[in-house]
Image 1 (cartoon, rainbow, N blue to C red):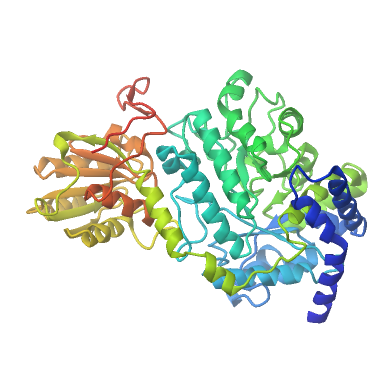
Image 2: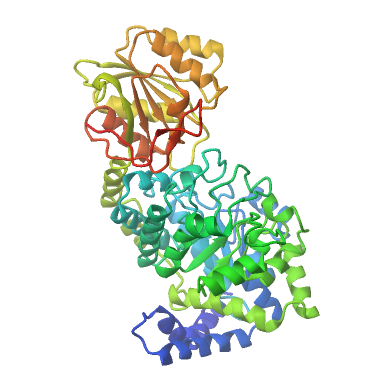
Length: 604
């Protein structure tokens, strides 16, 4: 097998080296070079069987830390869900063009293992009848959505970067993140989020968005596109045509966006236009209904008027279009799982991401081509876009990575220091009655840290309460910590009040406080003790509108370590709060009135 893989790879390099070089060159290269590259890629496509062509469209999950020798439980999970035991078997049977990594699929244990998995996947891709490297992808948005944690560098998430408002910070964060992904063999990142979050009740986007100002979001999206792609990673603007104004999570239902066409042009379109102008490599679709853009009210992922009529023809985008996960309920509500991939292709998609039943989806596309519902010429259009991207990324030249490369790039001291500096510029001070902050460890040495401890994203080493307590301890305070949860019980609140005795200040981490949340009771009871209370909104910044009694409020936009450490430095006066709200905070008693506008933020 090793000999065959080597021979296949040599053949592939001979066939496609010029294509790779042509696709990688900029606008100053001659049109002849581009045409030559496409001719060679067309030649590669012509040698593919129909089954191989169909496979190139699919990007699939697979369980396991190894491409050929996963743990038994992961092999069993693969057999149950996909009908194969390993990533290598998946590639051999279905000829898939891409693999998506997940932490829950045990793909991302640590950087060297990730690199080895990536190499194993590429070897399997080059050991098939028509050898083609795979495009390995991931959702590494940073902030609350990250599949790889320490020792990789974790950057502030999108809304935190929106609070900083610095395009140079956004670009640098993406370039650092991209360089680390590329070192591990991951060459397509499903980031940045280009949705404009104008709905505080949005359950699926929220702090994953840069903010509520379309032009500000557009500038940060373009900056991150350039950062990722300068590092050799395909950026992916998502979720077209815009998922920012919904109260339905498309994982569990089909959201409906009521924007008029004019509203869409003014609010949702600017970040995607900016991404296209910045040379975005891929754009991800949204499983949402926008009647103003498609009267048939098909999900955008399956809508030809939206994907071909608007994205391709009106915005002039000819890069790769990837669906959001086809396992999400939003795309499965109106049509069956056998029709969804076919309709997505007919709408204008190229990559079909993570179908719930790969055999069903793969065979459905195969039948659609054989029956003439989808022409082979249409199939070839998508494959050419995918191969152009692989060539641009240099995967035909050399798809492999090394442990040495990982060690040079991943979690380096300079990267970690940059993350800390960027995070400090994102922390937002919303309230500071009587100049309580910064806390002086000589005047207020004894602190109590309590609060919500939601499920941890990959950028955390422990519960946020413990992380904040540790960071403040390292800054010279004496700290006691108590986790009270996202819905503290009466007994837990009593325990927190008792623990506040003798303390000089209390820091409370809050998480998505609602009108009925017992987090409100916790804060008011603690404030009633007379000990000064500092609240830290560790996700949505809207918490401040529903709380009372606190003397100071910070917003961190996420509870990953890098953002909580920055908040601790701000609390202790080791850093200045420089963040400004990227979204408005409405009054809790009258949502038509703004409590804190976009751009608000205090400092000292």
